[in-house]
Amino acid sequence: MIITKEKPLQEILGFLKPYKKVLVVGCDGCVQPPRSLRESERMASLIELARNSSGQPIQISATTVSRQCCAEGLQNQLSVEGYEALLSMACGVGVQVLNSVFPSMPTFPAQNTVFLGYEVKREGEMFENCRACGECMLGETGGICPVTRCAKGLMNGPCGGCVEGKCEVPAEIRNWKGEVVQTLKTTAPGT
Amino acid sequence: MKPFSHLMKAISEGKFVYTGELEPHRSLDLSEVESWARTLKEAGILAANVTDNPRSDSAISSLVASYLIQRNTGLETIYQLRTADRNRLALLSDVLGAAALGLKNILALTGDHTRTGTTPSSKPVFDLDSTGLIALIHRMVHEGKDLDGNEIKGPRPEINVGGAANPNMDPLEIEVLKLERKAEAGAEFFQTQVVFDVEVARRFLREIEHLKVPTLIGIFPPRSYGQAEFFDKYVPGVRVPRPFMEAFARFKEIGDKQKRSEKINEYNVEYFSSFIREVKREKACAGIHIMAVGYPEVIRPLMESVK
Image (cartoon, rainbow over all chains, first blue to last red; front, side, top):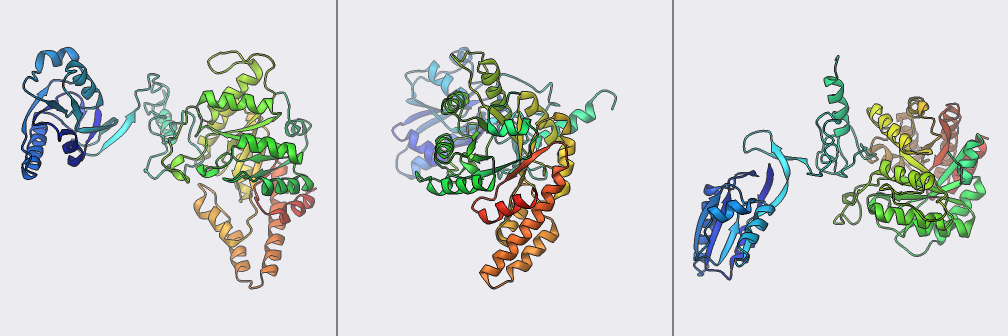
């Protein structure tokens, strides 16, 4: 799934400052943590509260679509009439498709899109494990991506900076090459 | 393998070789490294590496420094080139440039992550890794092509390419697998990370013997307790044997500076000459890479003691 991190509210308020009628558009697709109707409504309430308290009231509503990355779906599902601007809760792809379908309407991102990843527990911590590079080697590397999980993106790792299975870059990244070797050993036919 | 450089010619003739290391700084002034290069040459060092943004600290272009040092001092240089800062287009340009300037050795490195250096905000490139760079240079030299098959017009570059190795890697098996890839890609020599423990060096040399890549073991005689401690504590994987640290702890207590240096020099020469004698016996060991930057007093006596 595509992992996003909510932008600071002040940044979003800055985008929306010139506008009085805004629609927050959620996405029911692969963006995680969830950025659907509930989250869009929460975002709309926060913006409304902040604008009211600063004496600049705003008319703001929330909706959602099945996925923001389908132009045809957006045309069929979304009506933006009567609004001055859109705030997308989706990933960077969604923002751009929304913008291309409604070119006369300024579209702003409510999220920073960070990576393609997974979670161990539902709504728990998210971890990156795919760079969408277009040259998948997972069949040869024990189902572990050596490039994504290395800070230097090395195909032929590990580099000299690896100590006791940990990477030198302060991110607690495990020594993937060790994992690859271990996985291939334990899953090889005949073991 | 075709030896183009003095270094590779000597290795292919079966000579035991010594290389040194030069570290130009973030400055136009190369006079200090040039004088150091002269010292290395006089001591009998055959060639010296010229570092490329070591530890991701920005410094003068290693290509330019390699050329100027070689031209001005007559010491053959090993141009270090790291993939952390250049994509494959720029790497090809620099390799061709190096060949045009008459440089004959390149040590292909990935390089430390840019986060670890003086400019942590810089974008790390890593388009290729060290193995990829070795493959690129090998292809340029032996096939006259780049990785995409684009032809190099005119004569092919005459360069011997080497790779770095880390005998301290734990588990060592992973490092051996990686060095197999480097050898396959065309590495003609290896220079290793600093080793203090002769057993670590020996075990490593035996593990990579099947690759038949001449290997220079890296050593760094420390000038002080602080330097030895730095390697022991902060350099990934490097372990300094306890007796060595204990000896340096004793030297630290000597009040007289002159006397302290004498003791340290003496110990370094004794320790490392026995180290060299031991590793020299290993088949895969083609020489020693002395990384004692700024420590000329120990190099000559060390080399003389193992002749």
